[in-house]
Image 1 (spheres, rainbow, N blue to C red):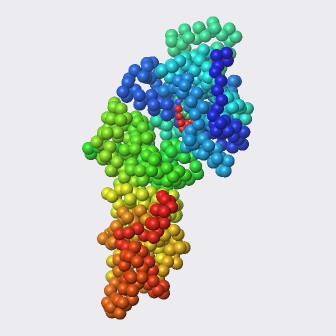
Image 2: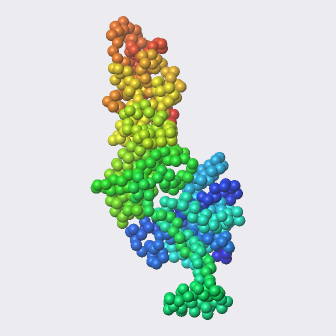
Image 3: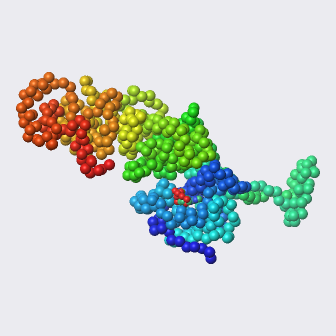
Length: 623
Ligand code: ADP
Ligand code: MG
């Protein structure tokens, strides 16, 4: 094209495209859902803008917020168009080639190890999946602020952008044309596309239409001279109703005047049901539908189902509906970027209109691993995101969501047969297939346990609820995870405090001299071996009226021993000598202790000082 400007793909993008175009990956279908998802995002954007400025929608067909799929069997072209926000020339250059998203190299790495392309959308590079099925792609786009442009590439390291002087004006939006490879011919079959839209794009909130063929019976004249005959039949049909029987009789005897033939016509066929799942009655939504909804929401099309979900509505002063999910797996960087990443994964809708998926006012940081959606009728529609962010209802919404989220997590434990220790206390729903739920809480804990701990540190209001979710190993847990409730149920008569010890690993802690006497006397001690545990225990002071006692710190009381006083008295001189020998800057005090059995002496941290483990952490700055 004469007016084309050429560009090179950013290096990582180019690498990704190479991999895709040479991929033997059998599930090429995924490109369709990625394109539909992009179309839906673009429609969300224009609809959002239209809330504060009606003009942006334009008029006529431009106001139809929809997605259209069309096939050209002869030219082997599949096109997907939307009436979304569109892209300016600059957008085309940046979004489709020159700016690498942070996920690009992470995804390239991922496919090289797992070979699984299914998660491409999660890495923010879904568009390039078009090259699984096409060897040449055109993106025609019209944004309100610019002219219509064409982006094109054969995935050979370069792409071109030119002002569009060939195609029909789009009005607004984007059309992606895939020139399909020979082996991707199946995407020219209407049934295949219908099946794929059903499978992957069921929960798109805009209508998806297919320009679908339809076989219709038409009467055509049997005679050779078609045009004159047609005139005759149309004239006679209205006036000669009574003559019908006669005609049929004649038809049996003689040659009929007309005959029926199949003719192919085309019309837009709606492929999806746009009723939002969250507006439906939870009782009528199947598990499978929730799983699929989770997948489309999170772009997590992996094999695993979400660990749990909660679908509820809140009424009263603040009305909203919400669906929350616990994903099956934590993203790799969940805790790496914890302190500088505020991004929640809840999508905010106001009266069915998508507002934002970067609304950090809806969830506290420690729950950012949840996926889901909130749709509120109480929030105002026609204000800016910034204004909305200040709205007083958000506090109420947030509070309720946290409660529901914690209930949902507790439910994973309640339904898990492995957690059956205090089943008698709970209403176990016998109808649930508990085999499927077996081990789910351990799985949750391994993926997101740290979030629970961070929650205890950050969220004083829900500290006790979160503490209930806590799991750990102890001197009596036999290698399994146990809970505070379980610990309490095993406490010895007269035992007041909950005992724990902190360190670098369970193995190291098991050998600790601090445990000697406690284990001998059959007390249970919790092992806290995660660096975050030290911080955790600075916030978790008590649970169910029981105090926590670090067994390596001062203040350990194991029930009264009558000999204590006697011992103290008889070793008075020795204690004094020790104190003198260890200059006061090395130790605060020297005391007779009843915490040991075999080891002659230990160094103990003062009640309010850092534990030895905390000192270690501070020195290495591990958190
Ligand atoms: P993601 O959707 O995760 O951002 P993609 O690779 O699917 O990543 O798309 C890249 C970008 O290209 C999008 O963020 C968007 O800016 C732009 N884009 C893709 N398709 C469209 C479309 N149909 N309309 C408008 N912009 C689009
Ligand atoms: Mg996308």
